[in-house]
Length: 395
Image (tube, rainbow, N blue to C red):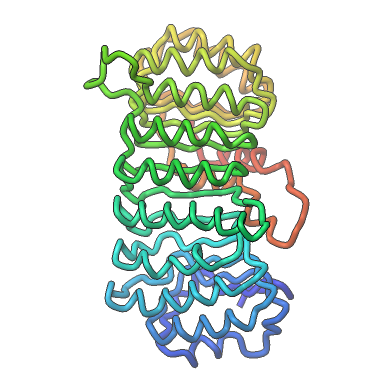
């Protein structure tokens, strides 16, 4: 086991745990009362092992962070609820819990009810990562409703919302759950980081979510990928606020704190591209270091405007990716952007794809997990991102 006095980590041990005893044996000799962070990701738990882990968690009164991502590989949907329900019930009983990651379990809508105790009965969370758990539309509505209900329950008890990080990626949530997620976001105005990719949000869904995010006055990281922010079917409809307009307004509102803006594969179309580069020129972004606009429809006129923003409004920008747009090869504006970022010891990705995933980008720049024991927020996270990108990207 990799551990410090306050961390118990069995990460990526590929353990196939079947019985309660097999789990309890892992913790022999460990002072459970002193554990603040538990990491079980990269192992697989059966029903009895899940129950055993729940009993171990109940002996961790000071637990603050639990990483339980990828703990059901090879398990059937019939097994998972029996293991997951007691685990989430036990986590809900941890009074100091603030950080939970149950992503990459893909247990599907049938197991969503197993997660509910964590939100309906647990303490106010600061970090909730539920990427790739197979929620789909109905499961998404259920969990979003529970998250909104949790905020009201905590407020009724005199507790303020604390949620800083919400990661929803790869759940195929669809527009059918977008209003529920927008409501949940509105109930947590403390949000600093929002990540959604591959959720099949289209223009109406993007619009309501971006509008809700606009109420989060401390927003630092926006990641929206594989969405449709401009719907061709809505051209010319009076009174319609396009998803691209809602995104651009969100960017403007977030200018003072924004550190990361990743909007790849969002189908901005011409109007959306113009509005977004206008937003980047309308405000000064003193903290914005990383921008992704790849796989959209930006062209040379937009790059000219983007260059102006880089020169005058983005003083610390150190990473930009614009692959798979128009007019990439011969644009003098992109050439100059590249020179500026190079002078800042940053990176500019223009023509070649890379093997560095967006999930890696966000994880590399995140300080959420490091802040489980009340440490001050370090402000070097995006610098770490740039260092990692420098090793992994080709220009």
